[in-house]
Image (cartoon, rainbow, N blue to C red; front, top):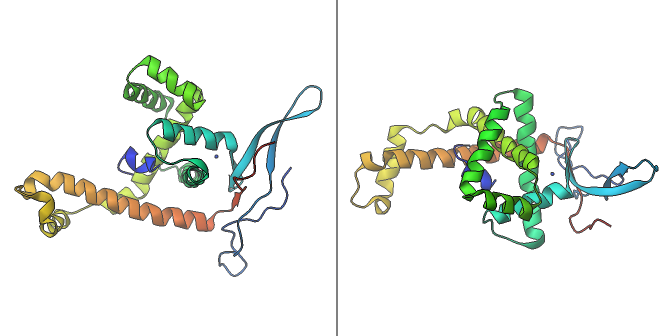
Length: 238
């Protein structure tokens, strides 16, 4: 997607009502998207079931759990994200759904890949961003993330970035003429500057805008084809 920042703006069932399901005529099914409480159980040696999590969404049969959602919320808040309450959870869930759809496409099309070395490098850069080992440990404690879980999150994000760059980046190239037109049409943004001084920054700006627009269209297409099932967030785990 051109930059990590673009992604920062970047998981016994009854009563399913699929969202985005195709009907027999090829159109999109109409109806309220809802799903009753969906539980995940850990069976102990005694044979009793212990509730350990709740599913808040399913994306083409891959689930996003309440714990994943809360960790993602904590992750964004700890890095300075704004928002609070149910709205923040809803927005974060939408981001997780979009990310899961892109990951599924990345694995299906095999346009990009991420190695263990890549993941380790991402974790290393993240630790440097936090400034110290103490800050890193405090971040893990605050978000409830393990190092392994953090590595998976950063690896997934890197894979999405690489996939989007290969899938969409080619269509986001900005010509010199386009950059110069932007320069001429926005004189107040570039007072006392020559085009050569700002050409690179204009090209980066227009490219990122184009990637964002194309990505929105691509995600909308993926969501339209997908089977999405949502569990109302107001349902609390018992």
